[in-house]
Picture 1 (cartoon, rainbow, N blue to C red):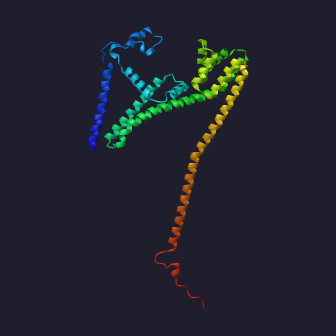
Picture 2 (picture 1 turned 120 degrees about the vertical axis):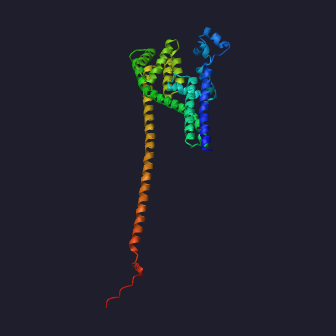
Picture 3 (picture 1 turned 90 degrees about the vertical axis):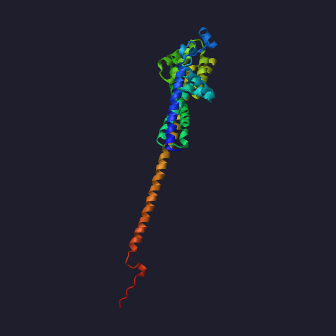
Length: 333
């Protein structure tokens, strides 16, 4: 493919993308002729059981706007994506306010951004005359990298928040036990901790207090919290609290024991993390040591070789007979 053909193809790609975007924008603002659907006609009369986003009718000229198109594309992308349960768990652990459809929409946006970056790189490389068969895969690689990057970002956020909750668990349990020892009930102790605390675990307990205030049993609200987050240490503590409530056991002693177990678990996790970090620190040290030893060995070998060559040059000079070719001098009389 010649340079002129590559330039023409790049210009055609840019013009085609611009034309497609313009047509989509015109279609999004064009009026939609026809009666609204049955769901939109009855939505204002059943607001308590319908989606709040569909209760208000849009403007006549924006019946199928960019927002609706994007929502439909996000729903289609969510249907073809796998791992919905794992994604919902990560969203809950990360404390993200988005639901699964909203996260899929964000992931689709990252993928579209990756396609745009790949297309720009493709056009730049084509105009520079460095195009090849592998260059045409840049938009696909950009889309995959964008979608995967969004999922990795959510996973890291979920892990970080779970680690913070595990670190706060022992302190929160001891505070609740202190409130119980002072004579307060378990509900009042949870309300006090959720009102005074500012961490991730206290925000989750604040939701439990709200559920109990709206009529849910305390055991049900705590069990729902343990089932939503699926953190082992928190689940064990909640199971012990629920069992103590059912059996009438002293909650203060139970919470003190759970706090001690949580601290021991955090110490073990810290020791394991320190061991992993130590091993990770030894990797570059070992590589640098091997490289240094190899460089020293190579330098010593080169010095020995240069020394041997120098000795050979000193022992053999032009115009001078060699040691074994010299005529022996006569012995003295």
